[in-house]
Image (cartoon, rainbow, N blue to C red; front, side, top):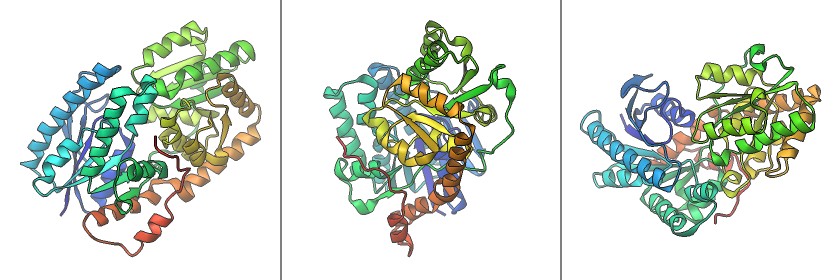
Length: 414
Protein backbone atom coordinates (compact mmCIF):
# COMPACT_ATOMS: atom_id res chain seq x y z
CA UNK A 1 0.00 0.00 0.00
CA UNK A 2 1.32 3.44 -0.96
CA UNK A 3 1.32 6.07 1.78
CA UNK A 4 0.77 9.81 1.29
CA UNK A 5 1.55 12.72 3.62
CA UNK A 6 -0.45 15.85 2.79
CA UNK A 7 0.88 19.21 4.01
CA UNK A 8 -1.48 22.20 4.19
CA UNK A 9 -0.95 25.43 6.11
CA UNK A 10 -3.79 27.88 5.52
CA UNK A 11 -6.83 25.84 6.61
CA UNK A 12 -7.51 22.86 8.89
CA UNK A 13 -8.76 19.53 7.61
CA UNK A 14 -11.42 18.46 6.94
CA UNK A 15 -12.54 22.13 6.69
CA UNK A 16 -10.37 22.67 3.58
CA UNK A 17 -12.70 21.07 1.05
CA UNK A 18 -10.29 20.62 -1.84
CA UNK A 19 -7.69 18.97 0.37
CA UNK A 20 -10.30 16.73 1.96
CA UNK A 21 -11.73 15.66 -1.38
CA UNK A 22 -8.25 14.83 -2.64
CA UNK A 23 -7.46 12.92 0.55
CA UNK A 24 -10.66 10.85 0.43
CA UNK A 25 -10.17 10.13 -3.27
CA UNK A 26 -6.67 8.81 -2.60
CA UNK A 27 -7.89 6.77 0.35
CA UNK A 28 -10.63 5.20 -1.79
CA UNK A 29 -7.97 4.35 -4.39
CA UNK A 30 -6.04 2.37 -1.77
CA UNK A 31 -3.58 4.94 -0.41
CA UNK A 32 -2.92 5.36 3.32
CA UNK A 33 -3.32 9.12 3.87
CA UNK A 34 -1.98 11.34 6.65
CA UNK A 35 -2.55 15.11 6.81
CA UNK A 36 -0.61 17.79 8.69
CA UNK A 37 -2.49 21.08 9.10
CA UNK A 38 -3.20 23.83 11.63
CA UNK A 39 -5.98 23.71 14.19
CA UNK A 40 -9.08 25.85 13.71
CA UNK A 41 -12.65 26.32 14.86
CA UNK A 42 -14.24 22.88 15.05
CA UNK A 43 -10.86 21.26 14.38
CA UNK A 44 -9.12 21.74 17.72
CA UNK A 45 -7.93 18.20 18.39
CA UNK A 46 -4.21 17.66 17.81
CA UNK A 47 -4.82 14.21 16.36
CA UNK A 48 -7.85 12.37 15.08
CA UNK A 49 -8.63 9.77 12.46
CA UNK A 50 -11.64 10.56 10.26
CA UNK A 51 -12.86 8.04 7.69
CA UNK A 52 -9.52 6.25 7.83
CA UNK A 53 -7.45 9.41 7.31
CA UNK A 54 -5.00 10.42 10.04
CA UNK A 55 -5.05 14.17 10.77
CA UNK A 56 -2.22 15.74 12.75
CA UNK A 57 -2.77 19.36 13.76
CA UNK A 58 -0.66 22.09 15.33
CA UNK A 59 -1.56 25.38 16.94
CA UNK A 60 -0.78 28.43 14.83
CA UNK A 61 -0.85 31.40 17.24
CA UNK A 62 0.03 34.00 14.60
CA UNK A 63 -2.25 34.77 11.64
CA UNK A 64 -0.29 36.96 9.27
CA UNK A 65 -1.72 40.36 8.35
CA UNK A 66 1.49 42.10 7.23
CA UNK A 67 4.89 41.10 5.92
CA UNK A 68 6.31 40.42 9.39
CA UNK A 69 3.12 38.66 10.42
CA UNK A 70 3.27 36.33 7.45
CA UNK A 71 6.96 35.64 8.06
CA UNK A 72 6.22 34.64 11.67
CA UNK A 73 3.20 32.56 10.67
CA UNK A 74 5.06 30.63 7.98
CA UNK A 75 8.16 30.09 10.12
CA UNK A 76 6.06 28.59 12.91
CA UNK A 77 4.00 26.49 10.49
CA UNK A 78 7.06 25.13 8.69
CA UNK A 79 8.81 24.19 11.94
CA UNK A 80 5.78 22.46 13.41
CA UNK A 81 4.93 20.69 10.15
CA UNK A 82 8.44 19.30 9.88
CA UNK A 83 8.40 18.10 13.49
CA UNK A 84 5.09 16.29 12.92
CA UNK A 85 6.37 14.84 9.64
CA UNK A 86 9.25 13.23 11.51
CA UNK A 87 6.80 11.73 13.97
CA UNK A 88 4.75 10.27 11.12
CA UNK A 89 7.87 9.10 9.26
CA UNK A 90 8.87 6.96 12.24
CA UNK A 91 5.30 5.78 12.77
CA UNK A 92 2.85 5.10 9.97
CA UNK A 93 5.36 6.31 7.40
CA UNK A 94 4.81 7.78 3.94
CA UNK A 95 6.15 7.39 0.40
CA UNK A 96 4.83 10.64 -1.08
CA UNK A 97 4.76 14.21 0.24
CA UNK A 98 1.80 16.12 -1.25
CA UNK A 99 2.28 19.83 -0.44
CA UNK A 100 -0.55 22.36 -0.87
CA UNK A 101 0.52 26.00 -0.98
CA UNK A 102 0.57 28.70 0.34
CA UNK A 103 3.32 29.15 1.39
CA UNK A 104 5.86 28.19 -1.27
CA UNK A 105 8.18 26.91 1.46
CA UNK A 106 6.86 23.40 1.82
CA UNK A 107 9.34 22.21 -0.81
CA UNK A 108 11.91 22.37 2.01
CA UNK A 109 10.12 19.48 3.69
CA UNK A 110 9.42 17.68 0.42
CA UNK A 111 13.02 18.15 -0.73
CA UNK A 112 14.36 16.78 2.55
CA UNK A 113 12.40 13.56 2.17
CA UNK A 114 13.40 13.21 -1.48
CA UNK A 115 16.88 12.54 -0.12
CA UNK A 116 15.40 9.33 1.31
CA UNK A 117 13.66 8.27 -1.89
CA UNK A 118 10.26 9.85 -1.28
CA UNK A 119 8.25 11.49 -4.08
CA UNK A 120 7.18 15.15 -3.93
CA UNK A 121 3.86 16.39 -5.36
CA UNK A 122 3.19 20.14 -5.50
CA UNK A 123 -0.51 21.07 -5.41
CA UNK A 124 -0.55 24.67 -6.67
CA UNK A 125 -3.50 26.36 -4.91
CA UNK A 126 -2.37 30.00 -5.00
CA UNK A 127 -0.07 31.95 -7.30
CA UNK A 128 1.90 33.55 -4.49
CA UNK A 129 3.66 36.35 -6.43
CA UNK A 130 0.25 37.53 -7.65
CA UNK A 131 -1.19 37.04 -4.16
CA UNK A 132 1.58 39.18 -2.65
CA UNK A 133 0.95 41.95 -5.17
CA UNK A 134 -2.80 41.78 -4.52
CA UNK A 135 -2.32 42.09 -0.76
CA UNK A 136 0.37 44.77 -0.70
CA UNK A 137 -0.08 46.58 -4.01
CA UNK A 138 3.56 46.41 -5.09
CA UNK A 139 6.35 44.18 -6.31
CA UNK A 140 9.92 44.83 -5.23
CA UNK A 141 12.38 42.55 -3.46
CA UNK A 142 9.82 40.38 -1.66
CA UNK A 143 7.85 39.84 -4.85
CA UNK A 144 11.03 38.63 -6.57
CA UNK A 145 11.65 36.34 -3.60
CA UNK A 146 8.16 34.88 -4.10
CA UNK A 147 8.93 34.15 -7.74
CA UNK A 148 12.21 32.49 -6.73
CA UNK A 149 10.55 30.31 -4.07
CA UNK A 150 7.82 29.34 -6.51
CA UNK A 151 10.45 28.26 -9.06
CA UNK A 152 12.32 26.23 -6.45
CA UNK A 153 9.07 24.51 -5.51
CA UNK A 154 8.35 23.50 -9.09
CA UNK A 155 11.92 22.29 -9.61
CA UNK A 156 11.67 20.10 -6.51
CA UNK A 157 8.36 18.57 -7.60
CA UNK A 158 8.15 15.18 -9.30
CA UNK A 159 4.74 16.28 -10.61
CA UNK A 160 2.63 19.41 -10.16
CA UNK A 161 -1.13 19.71 -9.89
CA UNK A 162 -2.75 22.91 -11.20
CA UNK A 163 -6.26 24.06 -10.36
CA UNK A 164 -6.88 25.40 -13.88
CA UNK A 165 -5.15 26.03 -17.20
CA UNK A 166 -3.96 29.49 -16.15
CA UNK A 167 -2.05 27.92 -13.27
CA UNK A 168 -0.72 25.21 -15.57
CA UNK A 169 0.71 27.95 -17.79
CA UNK A 170 2.49 29.47 -14.77
CA UNK A 171 3.94 26.07 -13.83
CA UNK A 172 5.38 25.54 -17.30
CA UNK A 173 6.50 29.04 -18.29
CA UNK A 174 7.49 30.61 -14.97
CA UNK A 175 8.13 27.48 -12.95
CA UNK A 176 10.12 25.72 -15.66
CA UNK A 177 8.50 22.33 -15.13
CA UNK A 178 8.02 19.98 -18.07
CA UNK A 179 4.47 20.10 -19.50
CA UNK A 180 3.99 16.34 -19.14
CA UNK A 181 4.53 16.71 -15.38
CA UNK A 182 1.68 19.21 -14.86
CA UNK A 183 -1.88 17.93 -14.37
CA UNK A 184 -5.02 20.07 -14.18
CA UNK A 185 -7.35 19.00 -11.36
CA UNK A 186 -10.04 21.60 -10.80
CA UNK A 187 -11.68 22.15 -7.40
CA UNK A 188 -15.07 20.64 -8.13
CA UNK A 189 -17.84 20.86 -5.53
CA UNK A 190 -19.20 17.75 -3.84
CA UNK A 191 -22.96 17.35 -4.17
CA UNK A 192 -22.93 14.97 -1.22
CA UNK A 193 -21.99 17.97 0.92
CA UNK A 194 -23.80 20.76 -0.93
CA UNK A 195 -27.38 19.65 -0.56
CA UNK A 196 -30.35 21.75 -1.64
CA UNK A 197 -32.59 22.33 1.39
CA UNK A 198 -35.67 24.43 2.22
CA UNK A 199 -34.90 28.08 3.01
CA UNK A 200 -34.77 29.39 6.57
CA UNK A 201 -36.80 32.59 6.36
CA UNK A 202 -35.49 33.77 9.72
CA UNK A 203 -32.16 34.52 8.07
CA UNK A 204 -33.82 37.26 6.01
CA UNK A 205 -34.40 39.26 9.20
CA UNK A 206 -37.93 40.15 8.17
CA UNK A 207 -36.95 41.35 4.68
CA UNK A 208 -38.13 40.06 1.31
CA UNK A 209 -34.76 39.09 -0.17
CA UNK A 210 -31.47 37.62 1.01
CA UNK A 211 -28.15 37.99 -0.82
CA UNK A 212 -25.56 35.41 0.27
CA UNK A 213 -21.78 35.31 0.36
CA UNK A 214 -19.42 32.62 1.63
CA UNK A 215 -15.65 32.96 1.73
CA UNK A 216 -12.67 34.52 3.41
CA UNK A 217 -12.87 38.03 4.85
CA UNK A 218 -9.61 39.38 3.46
CA UNK A 219 -8.46 42.35 1.43
CA UNK A 220 -8.47 40.75 -1.99
CA UNK A 221 -11.94 39.27 -1.44
CA UNK A 222 -13.53 42.66 -2.07
CA UNK A 223 -15.88 42.70 0.91
CA UNK A 224 -15.48 46.50 1.01
CA UNK A 225 -16.85 46.67 -2.55
CA UNK A 226 -19.78 44.50 -1.51
CA UNK A 227 -20.56 46.69 1.50
CA UNK A 228 -20.43 49.81 -0.68
CA UNK A 229 -22.82 48.06 -3.07
CA UNK A 230 -25.15 47.44 -0.11
CA UNK A 231 -24.94 51.15 0.73
CA UNK A 232 -25.89 52.04 -2.86
CA UNK A 233 -28.86 49.66 -2.71
CA UNK A 234 -30.09 51.01 0.62
CA UNK A 235 -29.29 54.72 0.42
CA UNK A 236 -29.23 55.51 -3.32
CA UNK A 237 -31.72 52.99 -4.72
CA UNK A 238 -34.04 53.00 -1.70
CA UNK A 239 -34.15 49.23 -1.33
CA UNK A 240 -34.72 48.40 2.31
CA UNK A 241 -36.20 44.97 1.58
CA UNK A 242 -32.84 43.22 1.03
CA UNK A 243 -30.67 41.58 3.69
CA UNK A 244 -27.12 40.32 3.19
CA UNK A 245 -25.70 37.20 4.86
CA UNK A 246 -21.88 37.07 4.83
CA UNK A 247 -20.40 33.75 5.97
CA UNK A 248 -16.70 33.40 6.75
CA UNK A 249 -13.83 34.59 8.91
CA UNK A 250 -10.51 36.21 8.20
CA UNK A 251 -8.09 38.98 9.06
CA UNK A 252 -10.43 41.72 7.76
CA UNK A 253 -13.62 40.60 9.50
CA UNK A 254 -13.62 43.22 12.25
CA UNK A 255 -12.53 45.92 9.82
CA UNK A 256 -15.50 45.06 7.58
CA UNK A 257 -17.89 45.17 10.51
CA UNK A 258 -16.65 48.67 11.29
CA UNK A 259 -17.04 49.70 7.66
CA UNK A 260 -20.66 48.50 7.68
CA UNK A 261 -21.25 50.75 10.70
CA UNK A 262 -19.59 53.71 8.99
CA UNK A 263 -21.70 53.23 5.85
CA UNK A 264 -24.91 53.07 7.89
CA UNK A 265 -25.82 49.57 6.74
CA UNK A 266 -24.95 47.40 9.75
CA UNK A 267 -28.63 46.51 10.20
CA UNK A 268 -28.74 45.12 6.67
CA UNK A 269 -25.75 42.81 6.99
CA UNK A 270 -25.19 39.66 9.06
CA UNK A 271 -21.54 38.71 9.57
CA UNK A 272 -21.52 35.13 10.84
CA UNK A 273 -17.75 34.57 11.10
CA UNK A 274 -16.59 31.02 10.48
CA UNK A 275 -19.50 28.64 11.04
CA UNK A 276 -20.40 24.99 10.55
CA UNK A 277 -21.37 23.53 7.20
CA UNK A 278 -24.98 23.33 8.36
CA UNK A 279 -25.12 27.07 9.08
CA UNK A 280 -23.35 27.92 5.84
CA UNK A 281 -25.74 25.76 3.82
CA UNK A 282 -28.74 27.31 5.56
CA UNK A 283 -27.58 30.78 4.51
CA UNK A 284 -26.88 29.83 0.90
CA UNK A 285 -30.07 27.80 0.49
CA UNK A 286 -32.07 30.78 1.74
CA UNK A 287 -30.31 33.28 -0.52
CA UNK A 288 -32.17 34.56 -3.59
CA UNK A 289 -28.88 35.69 -5.16
CA UNK A 290 -25.27 34.88 -4.30
CA UNK A 291 -22.41 37.29 -4.79
CA UNK A 292 -18.67 37.05 -5.43
CA UNK A 293 -17.08 40.50 -4.99
CA UNK A 294 -13.45 39.37 -5.47
CA UNK A 295 -11.30 42.33 -6.44
CA UNK A 296 -10.40 42.45 -10.12
CA UNK A 297 -6.64 41.94 -10.10
CA UNK A 298 -4.25 39.49 -11.72
CA UNK A 299 -4.40 37.05 -8.81
CA UNK A 300 -8.18 36.75 -8.86
CA UNK A 301 -8.34 36.85 -12.66
CA UNK A 302 -6.37 33.60 -12.94
CA UNK A 303 -7.83 31.83 -9.89
CA UNK A 304 -10.80 29.48 -9.71
CA UNK A 305 -13.05 30.43 -6.79
CA UNK A 306 -14.63 27.55 -4.91
CA UNK A 307 -17.50 29.72 -3.72
CA UNK A 308 -18.66 30.34 -7.30
CA UNK A 309 -19.05 26.62 -7.96
CA UNK A 310 -20.66 26.07 -4.55
CA UNK A 311 -23.27 28.68 -5.43
CA UNK A 312 -23.85 26.89 -8.74
CA UNK A 313 -24.13 23.50 -7.04
CA UNK A 314 -27.01 24.89 -4.99
CA UNK A 315 -28.72 26.33 -8.04
CA UNK A 316 -28.14 29.97 -7.13
CA UNK A 317 -27.77 32.84 -9.62
CA UNK A 318 -24.56 34.82 -9.13
CA UNK A 319 -23.34 38.38 -9.44
CA UNK A 320 -19.58 38.96 -9.63
CA UNK A 321 -16.99 41.23 -11.15
CA UNK A 322 -15.90 40.26 -14.66
CA UNK A 323 -12.90 37.98 -14.04
CA UNK A 324 -11.53 35.47 -16.57
CA UNK A 325 -11.71 32.32 -14.45
CA UNK A 326 -14.94 33.43 -12.76
CA UNK A 327 -16.56 33.81 -16.18
CA UNK A 328 -15.21 30.42 -17.30
CA UNK A 329 -16.63 28.67 -14.23
CA UNK A 330 -20.07 30.32 -14.12
CA UNK A 331 -20.80 31.25 -17.74
CA UNK A 332 -24.58 31.92 -17.98
CA UNK A 333 -25.08 31.29 -14.25
CA UNK A 334 -23.75 34.77 -13.45
CA UNK A 335 -24.14 38.43 -14.26
CA UNK A 336 -20.83 40.28 -14.55
CA UNK A 337 -20.40 43.75 -13.08
CA UNK A 338 -17.79 46.19 -14.31
CA UNK A 339 -14.48 45.47 -12.62
CA UNK A 340 -14.20 46.99 -9.11
CA UNK A 341 -17.35 49.08 -9.59
CA UNK A 342 -19.52 48.89 -6.47
CA UNK A 343 -22.43 50.77 -8.04
CA UNK A 344 -22.59 48.38 -11.00
CA UNK A 345 -22.36 45.45 -8.57
CA UNK A 346 -25.42 46.86 -6.77
CA UNK A 347 -27.22 47.39 -10.09
CA UNK A 348 -26.62 43.79 -11.18
CA UNK A 349 -27.85 42.47 -7.82
CA UNK A 350 -31.01 44.59 -8.14
CA UNK A 351 -31.53 43.40 -11.72
CA UNK A 352 -31.69 39.81 -10.52
CA UNK A 353 -33.83 40.54 -7.49
CA UNK A 354 -36.40 42.15 -9.80
CA UNK A 355 -36.46 39.22 -12.23
CA UNK A 356 -37.41 35.87 -10.62
CA UNK A 357 -37.60 34.07 -13.98
CA UNK A 358 -34.05 35.08 -14.82
CA UNK A 359 -32.87 33.99 -11.38
CA UNK A 360 -34.45 30.58 -11.90
CA UNK A 361 -32.99 30.08 -15.37
CA UNK A 362 -29.49 31.09 -14.27
CA UNK A 363 -29.66 28.85 -11.21
CA UNK A 364 -30.77 25.90 -13.32
CA UNK A 365 -27.92 26.46 -15.78
CA UNK A 366 -25.34 26.56 -12.99
CA UNK A 367 -26.66 23.44 -11.29
CA UNK A 368 -26.66 21.55 -14.60
CA UNK A 369 -23.11 22.68 -15.38
CA UNK A 370 -21.91 21.34 -12.04
CA UNK A 371 -23.70 18.03 -12.53
CA UNK A 372 -22.43 17.50 -16.06
CA UNK A 373 -18.93 19.02 -15.94
CA UNK A 374 -17.62 20.53 -12.71
CA UNK A 375 -18.57 18.20 -9.85
CA UNK A 376 -15.64 16.59 -8.05
CA UNK A 377 -16.48 13.14 -9.47
CA UNK A 378 -15.33 14.48 -12.85
CA UNK A 379 -12.00 15.64 -11.36
CA UNK A 380 -11.13 12.66 -9.15
CA UNK A 381 -9.97 10.49 -12.10
CA UNK A 382 -7.58 13.26 -13.13
CA UNK A 383 -6.01 13.28 -9.66
CA UNK A 384 -5.55 9.50 -9.82
CA UNK A 385 -4.09 9.78 -13.33
CA UNK A 386 -1.52 12.25 -11.97
CA UNK A 387 -0.59 9.78 -9.22
CA UNK A 388 -0.33 6.98 -11.76
CA UNK A 389 2.13 9.11 -13.73
CA UNK A 390 4.08 9.70 -10.51
CA UNK A 391 4.51 5.94 -10.24
CA UNK A 392 5.37 5.56 -13.93
CA UNK A 393 1.99 4.07 -14.80
CA UNK A 394 0.33 5.52 -17.91
CA UNK A 395 -3.40 4.96 -18.09
CA UNK A 396 -4.87 4.32 -21.51
CA UNK A 397 -7.25 7.24 -20.93
CA UNK A 398 -4.58 9.64 -19.63
CA UNK A 399 -4.19 11.38 -22.97
CA UNK A 400 -7.96 11.79 -23.22
CA UNK A 401 -8.14 13.19 -19.68
CA UNK A 402 -5.48 15.74 -20.49
CA UNK A 403 -7.19 16.70 -23.74
CA UNK A 404 -10.63 17.06 -22.21
CA UNK A 405 -9.65 18.79 -18.96
CA UNK A 406 -11.77 21.86 -18.25
CA UNK A 407 -10.02 24.36 -20.48
CA UNK A 408 -10.12 27.90 -19.13
CA UNK A 409 -8.89 31.28 -20.22
CA UNK A 410 -5.11 30.96 -20.21
CA UNK A 411 -3.53 34.15 -19.02
CA UNK A 412 0.20 34.83 -19.39
CA UNK A 413 2.17 34.81 -16.14
CA UNK A 414 3.91 37.97 -15.09
